Amino acid sequence: MKYLSMLLWDTKKQDFQDIKIESNNTLQKLYKYLDCKTIDITSRSINNIYYDIIVDDEGLLKNDHIVSYFENNQPQLVGNLIFSKANDQGENIGLTNKDINNLKENLKMIYYANDENDFIKALNYKRSKDQDQKK
Image 1: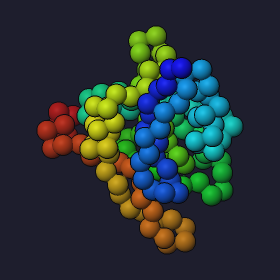
Image 2: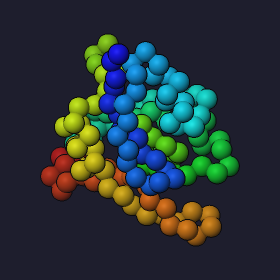
Image 3: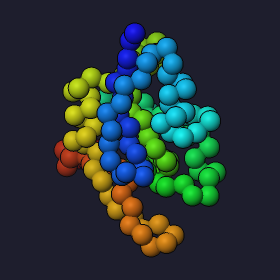
């Protein structure tokens, strides 16, 4: 049995979790981890490497959604997030240990106030000064 390594951002625990998903049962497991019925996949460049971010497609429609990812000039993402990678044919290939370390090192936690004035952690890609100057 082949397993794909992925990285889950859990909004309730406000922390990362390394996960392994069976390659032949991927969709059902993604639904479970994201607590959803439909998914969407968006890509983001983090430290010059493109990663797929798998999200609840209807997350923004939920009354109790929690913003989980901010990045300038990009739509915000809500709810649990799963980070992975795809090959040139668009097939999910999971993450290497190097990818997981890259994500954990380059995504920083930021705090924002929700409607109840509670502070919640969200992710933001922390660009280095060198990367900002290249724009």
